[in-house]
Length: 320
Image 1 (cartoon, rainbow, N blue to C red):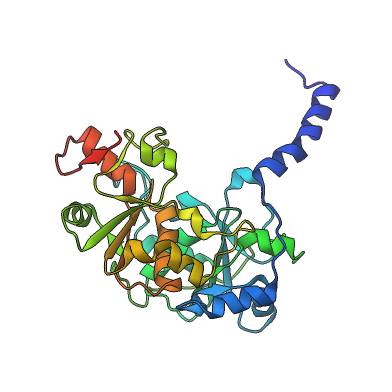
Image 2 (cartoon, rainbow, N blue to C red):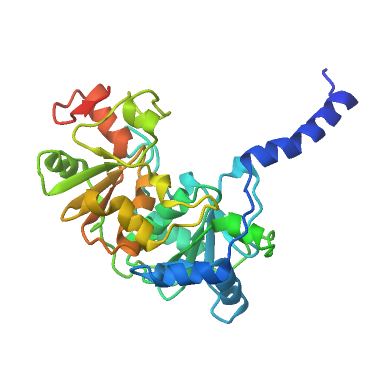
């Protein structure tokens, strides 16, 4: 039988804070006045909320449903009174597609929101830590249900912790509801066939939101079937929309970033599995007011499967 020595325990104890600092949430200080003024200039300011506004809402009688998309391996604190999920909680089961990363269906989303006590009239606030693209993905899936009042916490858990607001006591016991989607729609969903058509249509721009290493084919992330990028796609990494404090940039800054690229175009955003691209879809639609924006749910995982595994000639790539 093997035993852990006292020295090993001390080493683990000493290393744990270093581990937490390297992977955990990074607190940031955000000027609430400037943040509110920035959001007011967005095309749809009601899609966003600040930490101070969320705290006031949670202390009121409105009882919002707050959901954090937090990686359980990182052991981040949770906003007090919020629910926590991770990607497997809102992704489909493995036997539906021959690859991973696809969104869960309407019934599964309804069941999840029912377990959180949500109704179609609830205010739902989603948040994440550090990068915030996972909150963008969940936002996109909830909006697909036709839920009207969904908001994303600008700066996420970083801003909340930086403001020294309450954490802990997550996943409260609530009375389960029978949530039903008000108006389920796949209007903002890009399918494989749509992407194929868009590769040969000048009215469309296909936007690769991954890292430069993924776009160039130097890196193949786990789950994909080979390197490369969709032939004809433009590259603009999703995280260029964020400030150093992880809050979103101003509408003017984002217009300068995307304006010429998407002007007069219909847009399909993609990444590895539709997470980072969902965040881009949110930015283009809710901040800039772009109308024809679609998130490719299958993204590079599906496209690379079609190219490398299925040998589908319509799945053309470069940088492979």
